[in-house]
Image (cartoon, rainbow, N blue to C red; front, side, top):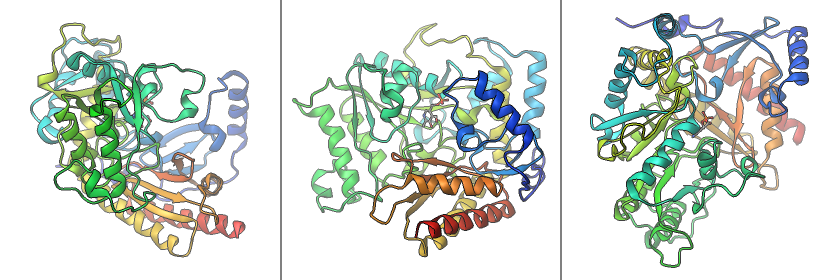
Length: 470
Ligand SMILES: Cc1ncc(COP(=O)(O)O)c(C=O)c1O
């Protein structure tokens, strides 16, 4: 028997209903926010609403407008807002014990067991889990410590286009200059090399010569990226100390929903093995069903040394970060990695119940199928829209890249489409190194009917915005 209600019964509605936006109540709260909140506030600048309640893939503002949510709190609400099966468990746990540091609770041990079971490749069953601070950045900090501790090195290698968070170590790995400006120097000997970008890599035909993998997939960008990684480890004049590890998003999120060629992760695995370095795969945005597999790593048949998780791990948006790593790296002693909030038991129940809900309602298959539907619908629009230069992704992780008539990245189109969608009740977000990628990351509980409606609105938005530009 399936746990919790069917995905059809989770939402306020199958279609949005918007009247005046932002309505008077939203206006008031937005103005109050403007007065007292930090000037770092960003989301309401692009989507000016104040939230009242949310259910499934729908969000209601304080004026009673209902929106379809195609970004799920930036990949957090994989089982939808306020999923009743998840809520029931988190509320019970909240009333029994919430803050547990690292004392054992059923919530903690059951979640660890489940994560060990669904972990990618050879990590399944042979891994340990460590909780630290509650965010994705905290999980990344833990992974930096793990790699340093196990290799005795301090250098870090990450990729152009990457996003790994904003605490000092994580920010060192993050590539976006806008996040780092004014805060350097960060961690020493951190290098960034190109990430394969199939939509943009020119084909120079030298893939085989550069790629260290035996079964090269002949993608030039991938081969050049692997060659750059290899040189950072092995070239005597590579310019940096040999890295302790390689940090990689299996599909870049913030960088523009970029799916690397099939052999890329395996190539990294081989280089890490040849150089006694750790391969750390950041599954913070891609994990827990987002791409139609438990982890995006599963698409590439590779066993990382460690994966980092956060975002969807708390089930209903409760904060929790974690790292799962091969047990051979469990070399630190008591207190080796700590954090006051490493025992948020309601979030742990939330994570476990979210995984159970995904299993019980076959949401991995649903994400795969619905993701293909979204990409097909956008590809149809692309046939008559030269500004759309690529439609990509896996499962319900979808990117649509836009360029202007001169072939330059066009962030303005994306912003205008986002506004048009918002005015018609559909919330979408952006990504990409130049802000020119529309990113769709709806809850996995999005229904076919909602997906169809959302794509009608998005198609209309693309047509309206590009018609203006022509
Ligand atoms: C791939 C990836 N890593 C790390 C992070 C940082 O997570 P947090 O914002 O919870 O610190 C994010 C956040 O968007 C992310 O997408």
